[in-house]
Length: 452
Image 1 (cartoon, rainbow, N blue to C red):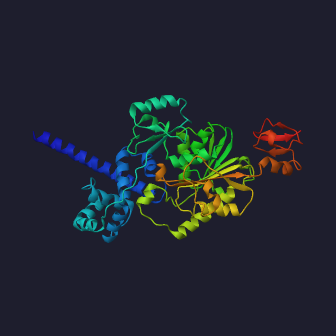
Image 2: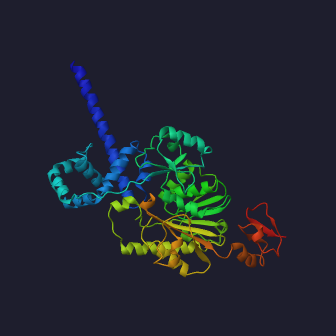
Image 3: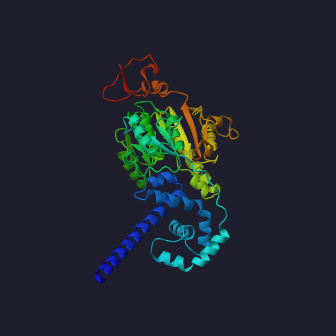
């Protein structure tokens, strides 16, 4: 009997130790995602669904609530002379709002000792938390891997009866905010992708045709890049440019996992250092530019109650203008879509206005004509051709502008290239060329023609 009791006690101890280890890993992952959210590196849903921690639902619940109480938790940490790191904030939330910590370690010991002080600080700073609209969960059928979307819909209906198709984006489905896809096989295999509706709009607005040569200038993590390849029905080429090595590695993994290897070419480079006149970039016909921004349109950023930082906005706008001006130098480009997940006009309408004023070759066109909310015409009249998204549209805050070239590349090249050489780079059908010359298709080079 004594041996049996000792054995049972040993098993319980091992189970407790295992539970502590599991919860420790959970808190570390939650802290990592909180840090990324605070930095504007993605939405809570996309970051939580991308986690490798098996308890995705718990991760999402903790992260969402830490961000919802972020301002109060930071004040408590500062008054208690604690570091305001995401790891500390996660522990404070669990201790003060969830009734206790389910892990060990020196931080738990420290917080437990000052628990009475922490409770008083919570009473001092805790005000009624602002309520934020829970946005729908948007799921896009990944047509790079799915050949029978009807079958996918049938499987979804068996498991998630409450969803609808989106009226603006093909293959995009709208689910209730609390829907959990983490264990659904079609999601785990990459046949379904979690992607906010606003994030899908740039590919729809750019709408590259089958076989086009497209460049995504700031590509990671790759959701928009993969959508571009899907819009082209997995034909043509998409050059996915990302300068940060860690983000580039994640981009490459996503492209491989989600079926984009056939058409997407990941490139680790700074877009501003890419020469538009050098192949293969000289052939690019469509450019998507979704640069670094304040991320102020994300619901999680609103939870943090951050105000606009004038110096940071100015620096971001300067970078955004430089990137957009560089995109306009690509000789064969005919359409550019510029987008941000910012609500500030400094990064949106003001950038578009400034870039348009500095040149005459490109003009702004009405993007997504059926979309209700438009840009702010007080910045410049043509801003009404831009698109704005908000919680009213059941999306995160977003901005989008579409540019078209007024002088076709073929017309410019007809005068420049034929006088000095035999080969011409052209992404237009032959009918657009100056027909004083006769051409035939060059069998070795796609989109190249030679003079007869």
